[in-house]
Image 1 (tube, protein in one colour):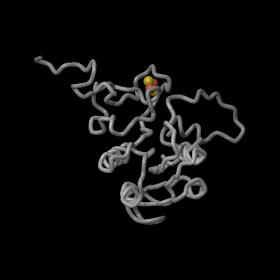
Image 2 (cartoon, protein in one colour):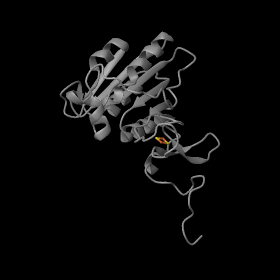
Image 3 (spheres, protein in one colour):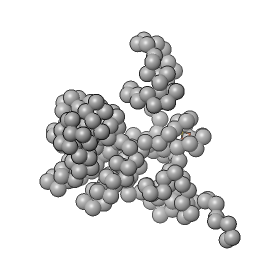
Image 4 (cartoon, protein in one colour):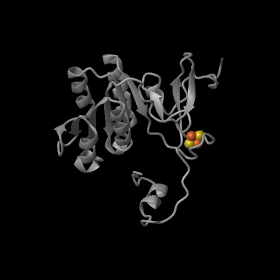
Length: 213
Ligand code: FES
């Protein structure tokens, strides 16, 4: 379990002593969908978003997939699991904003150069929303599906409180406010209305109509 101590709850968790007992509910939500065939996958992690990618890399390699990974963060100390990443992947690229590890730049630039030189079949990504949005655009440019684990605040985790909703276009073309905790946290990047996150777009099913109509 990887915790970034951001708020009261995660600070409390991070301060627990080893062997302290906790109640845990899980697993929650839907996992990364795995391909049926041995494909060439690119896994992209931003900051601590790399955390779920290691088990995914193992699962993909057990299926005969080739796994490239690109990790990025503001600086080397914000990067999680770079050593582990080397163990579970066929090739690893690292990018940091300040150049303290790997190449200086954004992880999306590293992803672009991998896409330019390799035949990537699918991208799996976890990290901040702007990174996921940029990768989804990149995926569309290279005609590659991007499976995104979204970074949304979640209160209940079981589909009741609606804290975690974001606008997602379904296969029927209809936009719905989808719950990251039960409908996600994995969404196809080309289905999420990234620029409208934090709002309820007017075309959303059940959205209040603008006054005067
Ligand atoms: S966290 Fe409560 S509905 Fe998703």
